[in-house]
Length: 274
Ligand code: PAF
Image 1 (cartoon, helix red, strand yellow):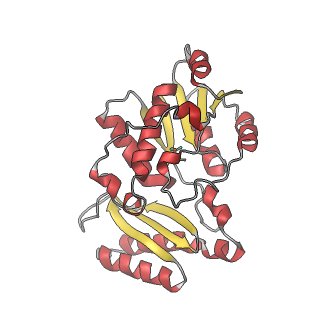
Image 2 (cartoon, helix red, strand yellow):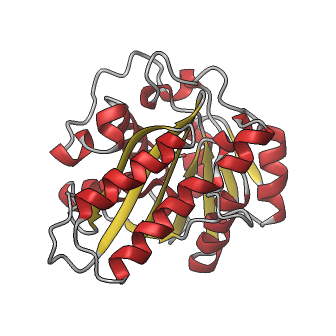
Image 3 (cartoon, protein in one colour):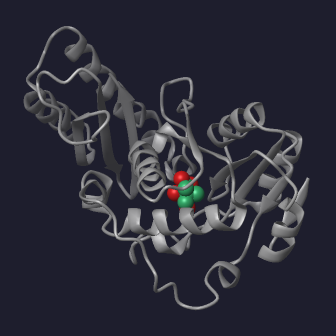
C-alpha cells in the first residue's frame, strides 16, 4: 500500500488507473469505515482512501482539535484490506491559501444537521469536491450513517455533472445497536450504556409507522420527550421523505427517520430507513 501526502505524486501514481473507487474519511477508522473500504474493494481493483480532518466542516466551538488522529493505526488497518493508496495530506497541501471558493448549497443543507451545524455541509461539499478533483475516482463510497451527507453529495454529483457513481454503504452497529462512530469514544461507561437508546428510539418510531401510525409530528414529539426524560439534549428527531429529505407527508411511501442528540458533551447522530 502506498501512502501519499502530496498531490503531484498521488496523481502521477493514479495516472494510468481505470475505475478508481474512492473512500473519503477523516481517519480514526473503525469497522464502519472498513466496511466501506471492503465494499469499494468489491467494486474496483484500485481503491484509494483519503484521511483528512477537514477544518471547514467544524464550527469554531466544535471538536476539531480533539478529533482523534490515529494515522499509523489507520494505515495498518487499510494495508490489511489491500488498499492500493492512502492520501493523507496535511492542511497546507489542501489549503495552501485560505479556501475562499466555497460551494453554495441547496436549502436541504440548512435543515437537520445543517440547522444545528451552520456551514457544515458547505465545508463537507467543498472538501469532497476538492478530493474528487484530486483523485478523479469513477466510484465513491459514502456511509448511510451520515445520511444527509450522502444525500447532499449525490445531489452535488448530479447537479454539477460529475462523472462519479456514488455508492451507499450500510451503517455498522455495535451489538447493542449503537451506530459506530469515532465520536463514541468520547462517551464514558454510563453514557455508552445509555447511547443505545437513540437507536432504540428510531426503531420504535419505525415500528409505529409500520403498524400504521401516520401522525409523524406526535411520534417525533414523544420520541424527543422520552429521550429528554432519560437525560439527553435532543437537536432533532425527524421523519423525512427519503428522496427529498424534506419532512414526510402522511402518504409518502419511502421514509427515513433521522436523529441527533447529545449525551453531555457528545453529540450522536443516527438514522433508519422505513
Ligand atoms: O464523513 C466524513 O468522514 C467526512 O464528512 C468526509 C466525507 C470525509 C469529508 O471530510
